[in-house]
Image (cartoon, rainbow, N blue to C red; front, top):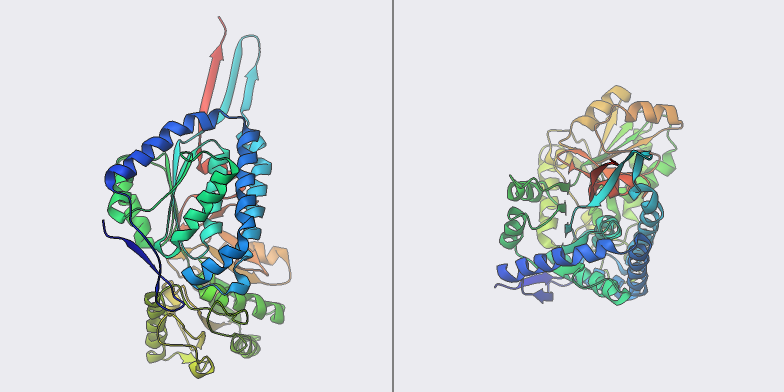
Length: 460
């Protein structure tokens, strides 16, 4: 079979190459996972939790190596490369903490005549198709609760982060999780779709593009396999007249530019009350100009290359089209000499934008943000909801009641007040519209990887 190559955005070289499994080998892996799952589920919950936490500890011990590998694989500056490990630990710890209560049977009656209760049963083999942008965090969101709940897991990582799956498997196997209970595999699209169509999995979790999610749904059609689909976003920020201006600029610009803008919940469009608009734009431009674009292996770099030059081309095309339609770019690319026309892309702030422009409607997934002036809450709400996506929305105001009132009217999965681009493990990570369906984290994350099972026991 044709090898899958990982092209490093650092210099365009082949950083890793793996041969995908044949169809027969892939089905054999699924069979082994299914066979191993029963014994794994029969282990005490405390044992499964201990092994999962030990796997995360082993992974954390590799954080320096991981930081360097991530820089080569997807371009994240090495100064930020260890950052995912904090979230991996926090999310795993929280899911482990709530597991016993969440997975415990809900007893309706336990008498000398009846024992009736509602339990949670593992789904069997959980298939994770993980993305490259936050490759460890997005995987652990499903991996930890799936294993804790008694499922076996097969992980297929993105071709841009091939080594991430290998590191995860290494860590968890060294910690004692059986090799067939957690398998990392390399698959092509055709074999992936064949496995799903054959009902090889009890649950499929996919994070990626809308087109990718549609392909997963087509493959699963008629199998009744439950799906979790997180398909990106075009997340808005709204700065009200009563906002803390400096805090809004710092958080929203970081949300737009961190990880070279390659965040599903990154800020991609901002609406600012007319009374603060000029000051917000001026401060935002100064914030972005302070970034340093360069090699992710340089400790001084704060903005690395995009993960692939074809991703950067999408952003360049959106910017060029918007400018041709009347948008005004406020960042001179000459300030960022590392911009090479390829994966290294200068950040951009656009004004004079509107919703006729692709840059304000289609996911950019890069270091560009458009800023629009609004006169009131009603206009801001209309614009925030004028999107095919619905992942998060960031509202900047001084009181909870206003944020809650506005949040109730925003079509989104998460409402933030005075923060952005953040996952709280106690809250469900979910979305609506083209962002997909399902949810991870919180107690509902366990519901995604288990099913209700009722017991109605009678003595005669």
